[in-house]
Image 1: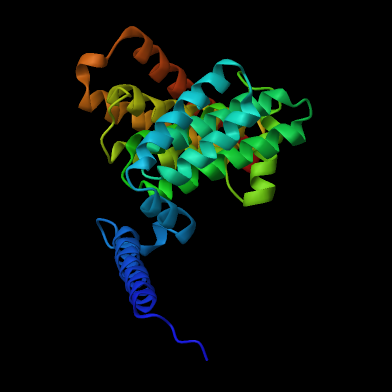
Image 2: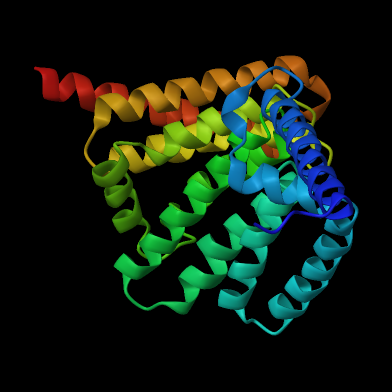
Length: 277
């Protein structure tokens, strides 16, 4: 039997000990990342934390490189290549809200626009919203990300601005049992609970008023007069609260909007009373 030389044995033991220490510190790092600032274990998974830890200082260089390539692909309108790049950046930089916003818009608008059928468009819009909401889980205090999610739920389902919006609204209810206006309200309200750096707070507050107003008009068109009346009333209340907080913003356009909503409420009340007789 051939004996193992002492130097080789020492080297082997040293390598094993080094690996064990490395695994120990890696596990500690993963545990720390999983806990996060509030001890929330749900925002991380090993497919993200292990690469982040192992890359070390090279992670920043790789992210910069990917951002440069991503911007180039965006300018070239190579949206599917951009999709792959953004997904990788999100893995490497999960707590950077901008990548989740950028990718969600890429999917909901750029890639969805490339398809002709409403079903294909919807698949990409749905995927984009799911991606953004996953980003919200990993960035639970990002008012900017919350607002963008809410705005997509509002704008992408708007009848005047978006073709096939009725189809998208129907699919959202069928596939996920969600109402786009309620989702928009939820996320925009949530955004106001946190700091907004790239959006004017007053504009975001006004967005809430407009979401409720658009919801009233949409549900009226769909024949749901009671729900439409509720939305219109809530919109008026939201406008009144907004003016009470910001009296300096009581401009002619705001007064016209309040007058329009008030008239609509009276009209809807008359219609509902007529149907109830």
